[in-house]
Amino acid sequence: MSTIDLGGAVRTGEELDVRAVGNWLIEHGSEISGPVEVTQYSGGASNWTYRLKYKNADLILRRPPKGTKAKSAHDMVREFNVQNWLAPFYPVVPEMVALCQDESIIGCDFYVMKRIEGIIPRAKLPPELNFGEKEVRELCINGLNKLIELHDVPYKGTKLESLGKGDGYCRRQVEGWDIRYDKAHTINVPSFKFVREWLKNNIPEDSKSCVIHNDWRFDNIILDPKNPTQVIGVLDWEMATIGDPLMDLGSALAYWVEDTDGQIFKSTRRQPTHLKGMFTRKEVVEYYLEKTGLKTENWAFYEVFGIFRLAVIAQQIYYRYYHKQTDNPAFKDFWIIIHALHIRALKLIGKQKIEANEIAQKYIEKMKELLPK
Image (tube, rainbow, N blue to C red; front, top):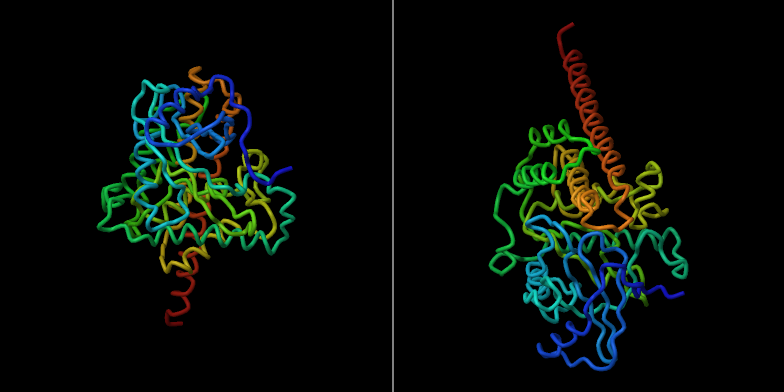
């Protein structure tokens, strides 16, 4: 068994016109030769990702899914540009080959990039790696350090600066995802009314502005086959922008399933965060804040926002299944996950309120001690 993810059979209804793509690549300067072997990567709940293995070239093609999509999502032009612009400062992005905006080729925009040969740490690490607790801890730290490095990219004065709108990122995100949820709502999921109101009433000032990935997970990184705790690639730049790094971290933790989490979350786990040696969500926050020097008095906001944002993303995908715009069976039970995310967000808000009450009570008791007897 190979530790390298080579992709699998192309899913029914998601076939690729490889002849049209090959002709287009040749027209745009690619010296490909020989027959092409096509596989599809299984992680494509959003954009579809294919491997094109030619005799003399190993390429990856990214395209949006069929069916209704959010206005700002699945933007191949933007994702292509982000990686091109980021490459001089952040060498773990893939090398771009070409961008196609001619829908007559395969019916949509798409782009092609060079494939990075490596290991993608998905829900289960390949047993051949034989990772112990020490190696898992190194992988965890190296992954977080790559996120911190991204947040330190000197973007000002570069084309990357055009990705964002400046101050007010936290507010725009809360308001934007609130609207998206309404548009994707179906009758079998919660309204998130209390969570949405709580977020609106607790929006902090931006901690700082930087390049953020917006979909940071271990299954979006590539590990060195010869030294598999080291990160050599970072994938899926669809939602990258200029924004608040604590929002990026909060969004990342929405995917961070611990071994003590409930069965619904365990069944949806897409990365090996449950292994011994991995940080808990609390430890991730502590490590990140210590390394960056950033501070926050209301971490619960970022974590609740991340959960709500993930619920919206899942609901946008489920909306396509609900309205028969896709028949991918992987999306059939997403509505159950959205209920579980709703409960988790409510629990975090409740815990935060309890902790605030406890702090207030301790303050009152302290004041009583200072009063004259």
